[in-house]
Length: 458
Ligand code: S3P
Image (tube, rainbow, N blue to C red; front, side):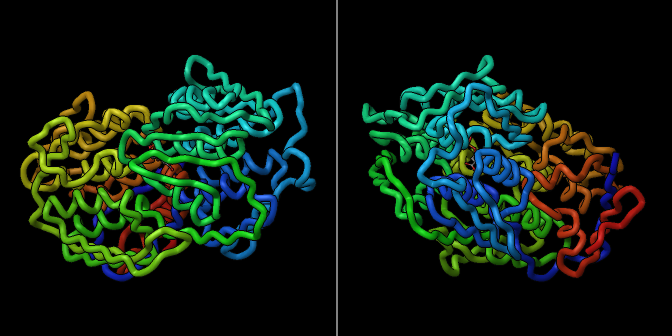
């Protein structure tokens, strides 16, 4: 098995760098593009393993994908007047690998596509909860059967899904919202959804960009049945969740100053930046334009030696409302690492969802930080961290195959006293292709990432 060794850089991280393409928006470009009966051109798509899982799913339904340079063109199955797959009794097995986003969002598309499909995934994905998407889809007339709430999931797709116009369906997940929107757009009556927690709004923005009929008032979205028959262009901005690792590296490594450009700055994704600023980190961001209905700009992050702890506790009415926990869920392991070097105590609550991500990210974050020499107490729905002067490192990291924990450990290796070793570093590809090359080449290009006796090229 490959092992990567990370050690402290011998000088600061400085310079300008682009973020990898946004994974969430690429999934949506592919899945909403699948509603189109003409070509959908996706510029700057994420080539992460998760997005490849969605692309493969579409290909197995007969969609065609042509890659040229930095553009991916999605074409409908050969006979657009026919359903994408003719009804069959034998299920078509589809492997979603590690991607919860592929699994949950595609349930909406598959429910409205004629055929029988069976979704599975890797060991991690097969443990994750799927009823949250399956149950509301049944209200639209979908026939979706989970295995005790998890995978494999069998879908008897129906080209004539009835839709749902009753009281708004309450939804607490962006993936589920998207599944229902895809099914609603392909149904006879459409669907009405009520958002119950803050969440990323990329699907609504994408639908508006594509001209799909959607109206939103007071968190209630009404999605009309629609067909899409136009040549469409979607440009994908950089991924804030990927940029977050570079931002954290800059605030932690002495003397650093990084500018991350072309990054999506959708207001529903910047909670991590807001929390860092609330901790006294020197982080600024500026919206410079819009791509495909998504605000986009640059982030400047500097070494921040005077950071202090923060309380992020939606359950405590006296906790200052600095940033929404739900909108920074993916960045919380990284926030924990920053908190381990900030003065005082950081408390994160209301994050029980972390327990059902690619790993139990509360336990896994706690295990990694303790291994590094940090002080962290696991809570049922979050953690309490007391900042320390130094992280010793000199250890081998168990990231449980979770890409975000693995990359968080990679950033930790830049500030530990002793180098750290990370086995199976390629899990980073799940969301951030070429992560180690980017880290090795960051700024003045002096970060040493040594992979099984081979220095990672810059
Ligand atoms: C995602 C939504 C979030 C996030 C996940 C990606 C998306 O999950 O944690 O990594 O692309 O819609 P929820 O659907 O639970 O909000």
